[in-house]
Image (cartoon, rainbow, N blue to C red):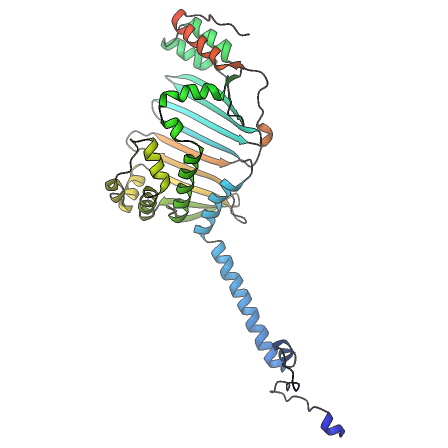
Length: 362
């Protein structure tokens, strides 16, 4: 065999390398042996596809509907969340604020309700603390009771002696409402309390969530200017999705279970059919209602939801704000000292009848 026969001629400028006899050359080998011009064209096309695909995916990820959906999902997926619901009312006859804070941990749930108002020119307020443990027991505590007690006394709802006795008993004292107390208190509901057991409640919850995912009726009206680096959206309701959600849920097992336990509960077909986009838009405009959702720009975490309404005729203004305050499980503390619920009930009725406390703390 001569050297000329054993040596392969180099590929031409516009030719791909010849295949080795009996072997299949991979695309990578072909690309390596391709002319420089071909490599540049392929590399450019590949880069364009990657960049355009990435841009398209990012655009979808940042679209308003995706941001809103992810923000709402983040509310239910966070471990041990802490939330805050604040409300304020301003009108010629009443000015008031309410703030409800909730915290969760592996031990249970803690709630703090602060109410402050100005009624007939007088400041009124109180703070209710509540803790629920994993055993089904509740603990209640009342603080800042003085202004409310003063109003009750001035309006004559309770005699001053009774108010003072109740104030002394309730203020900074935890009252334990046991699971047995709750069972006794709900016995008057008849079969509903036993009918809506854990399995039934789960079925209703699962069907509601499933139908809501399929018929998510909150939609973006417009995106507003960012605030504090967060994306802000003006929201409205989609009538078609609401009708679809209601119809779908009505045909579910959860709805059947709810109707069985609460025979008076019903969603008439006529009411579903009457829902229209024009009626929703008109109602929101007439009440001066605006709804805004705030979400973080990068990972689309829920920040807050605000609802503002203004009645043009009465001048009354209402604001509701729901916030995500992160996670604070350390704020859930189960009380170690408390008085039984029966003592509170005995004291309350005693003060109503006699104007004084006949029960004493142990």
